[in-house]
Every structure is written in structure tokens, then in C-alpha cells.
Length: 330
Image (cartoon, rainbow, N blue to C red):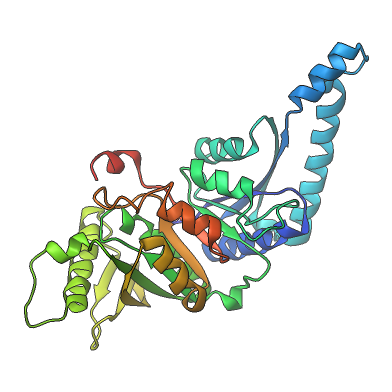
């Protein structure tokens, strides 16, 4: 299971950013993690060039950016004092960069952060789509990204939806989903869409005594068990329930263990992202998705299913980019 020790919280100081502070603190409290804040000041290239051409004695690097950085650091430290308990406080980081989303992603990678927690929308993102900065961080980040909004409270996060196409890559979100389930005492739903052109799971060995959904369910659990073995996640086991489609993860930590309930839902749909969005609206508080899936399913990779869901679903989303080596071998 994911062991969260470093959390990065991007902020633009707007009210929209506040939920990210509270959720980061909640996760930090569960795992004893440190929380660093980051604010990125976008470079004003064209404004700087215009000032230079006018001959105005004003230097952006010497006059504007240092003052802006100082103010941003002061604001971040104030926010950390207000929202983060002392034992979880980390650093306040202020960067100047032409592309804030790429700067956040790069700092998260280089700083070896375990999780980015950020607002779904920034100060100027008022439409229903996920904000442009959050959307771009999702696209670029190699660190899992948890995007939240004001409607998500710790008491309200009880249903975690994990879409899967049955591939090892799609299961790579499991440690992150279990981390959230542990933090918020939530239940996990594995959700599989049987698209119109079929699921590659339907081509596997079938039991003629069982329904199509029951066969796919068995294939999903077999593959999930294979994933746990392949990734050497001995601390996570699956306990089959007395009723099909309702099982439990058993998490062993030292001499103690606890369980997390999960169910499997299989539905036929026109496309994966439509099925995920429609099911999630009434049955999930947060969606946890891999940014890539099985290579044979053209719709299940970043730029299509995950990006469509992240952009259009009006719910918190956690995205996890699988390891590059695993993507090569998927």
C-alpha cells in the first residue's frame, strides 16, 4: 500500500484552494507525512519585452519577481499556520516559470513527493470543467494527483470508484485507492465497462455454467491477484466473500491486519468514459484512475478515457501515471 511521506500542495491563494489544504492535512495525519506548499508565478515575457522596448527603467527580475516571491512565501506560511498542524508542516516553495503546471509536475518528481493534492479549479476557473492548471498537472505529473473541491469533506468520502479494463496497468492505482480508503474509512468499487466492441476479458477461458458478467468478474479477480503477486504486494491479500462481486482486501501491517470492503460492478456501455461518468455521478465520491490501460483498448489511455473523465466529471479525481517501464511492456 502507498506509504505517503511527502505531500505537495499547489496554491493560488484563492478560496477554491482551501479544500486541498484540509485534505492534505487529513492524509498527513494518517501517515505522519510532511506537507510542502508551492506557488508558481508565471513569467510575464511579453510584458517584460514591452517595458524594455519603451525604455522604462524597470527590471522584472530585479523589481517585480523578488517582491512577488517574498509576498507569496509570506502568504503560504500564513496559510500553513492556519490549516496545517505543526508536526506536518514542511516547506513553502515559490517558483517563477512560464508554465506553472509543468513546474509543479517537475518539482513533484524531483522532490520525490508521494502525492499532489490540489484544487480542481483555481481562482479564475468558474466553469464546470476541471480547471486548466489542474488538467495540465494531471497530464504531465508522474506523481499521483488528487484534485478536490469544496463539496468533498472527510465525512463525505466513503465511496471510491476504481475503473479497470482488467490490465495490470489499470490495477496500478490500487495502492493509492487503498491509501484513500484507509484514510477516510471508505469502500472501493472496481468498475468495468463492457464496451460495444467487447472486452478482451471475454476472450479468456469461460465457464459455460456462469453468466458473462460472472466470468468477467472471475477474470478480473484472477488478474488482480496476479497483479499483487507481480508487484510483490504481500501485505495485500484478497478474501473472497460469500456472495459474488462482494469481497475484501486484507491489509497486514506488522502483527496487525484490517480489511477494506470492495465490490465489483460490470456494466455494458457505449464507451468506457461515458460508462464511468454515468455510474460515478450516483455511486462515487471520488474516482481513482490510471492514466493508461490495456493497449488493445483504444479508449483507455490518457488523452481519451482518463482525460475525458478528469475534464468532465464533476467529482474529485485521483490520477496515477504508471511506471514508464511498465508502460513499455503493457
